[in-house]
Every structure is written in C-alpha cells, then in structure tokens.
Length: 68
Image (tube, rainbow, N blue to C red; front, top):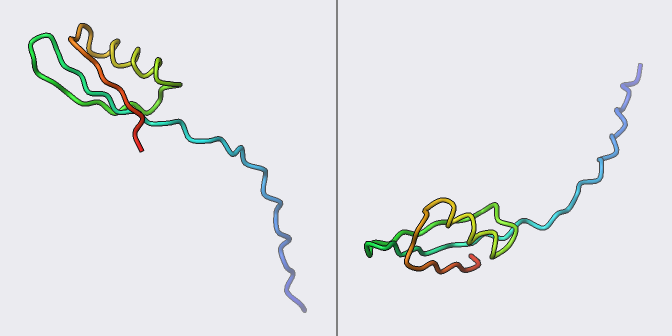
C-alpha cells in the first residue's frame, strides 16, 4: 500500500501593508527637565505630535523626527 501525499494548501494572499513609520520625540517641560518618547502608532507627524501632547500636557517645546 502506498502512502498518500497531502496536497499543499494554497496560501491565502497576505495583505502587504507597509509598516507604519516610527517617530521619536524630545520634550522639554516648563520646569526645564526633558524626556524622550517613541511613538509607534501614529498616522503621521501631526498625529504623533497630538499623541505626545495628549500624554504629557503643557510643555515648553517638542521636537519630533522620523526614526530610522
């Protein structure tokens, strides 16, 4: 008796989405101290800025850059 071969299942096509960009933000607070953040789920630069502001509140300055 011969062994039966399993037929290969057709792989379902994967959605090849480009990964979302990751941003890094440097924040300087009103009292002078600073902190860095990594933003992974932002739609874009403006969205990353809004995410940081909603997290930390009032700040003196924010610098956001695309992380490579």
